[in-house]
Length: 315
Image: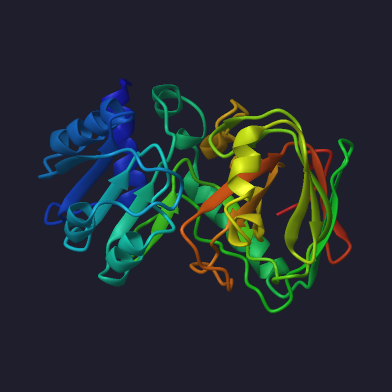
């Protein structure tokens, strides 16, 4: 199966487009080749796709140009293999409100298109995610530890796990990140305390080890020489806010040093910093980035679900 056929399989399985759907592919100069693959796949399936190349954003959550945003709200299916994520943008919110089905793929590479988490059994992943939600949606507290030094506790009381990042984006107004396969939640603001040691990817790519001291939900100190992280955290309170905790649920995803694939890998966890207004939190700004902990121990209300990066929870 060549890459166009695999892209076509992803479109069909994950977005289930109809012939009458207005299908939009958004890319930028860094991802133009991948955008063209999805365009050709949609064309080969007898859809009438539109391919738009926009300027490379400045960071995750940066708004697309007005012209792109205008076309998004008149599209039924949107595929967005862009350098930076447009998930947490007003343009995406507006398109979802109009009923668009959206798959964002920030940082997708040709390698990831041809193997790994993108080709997972998403029906099975969706079942496991539903079972996770039925068991833990009334939970109150999460504790994360790691041999590398992570030791943080935070409240999730009255917050709901987001269970729709399962790769199946068939309903009006739904969105998924591809490769898919994670559950995530917005921790209660100001409740997180402890230390996070990022030992995997931070933002787009693999990073050196970074220690983040957290007090009352905010990063108060950074240990490590990663200037990109330090620059990010100097952007203000929002960028220093722990806004997301996620658990990878995709057994086909590999650790390749790319946050898009890595954060879906079964048994890993990631922490988000910045905006969480679209999934139950109170933080709203123009940035959202993630950092990985690769081999954590995770306890939810005292029940251990991950030990040393291995999922011990039976779903």
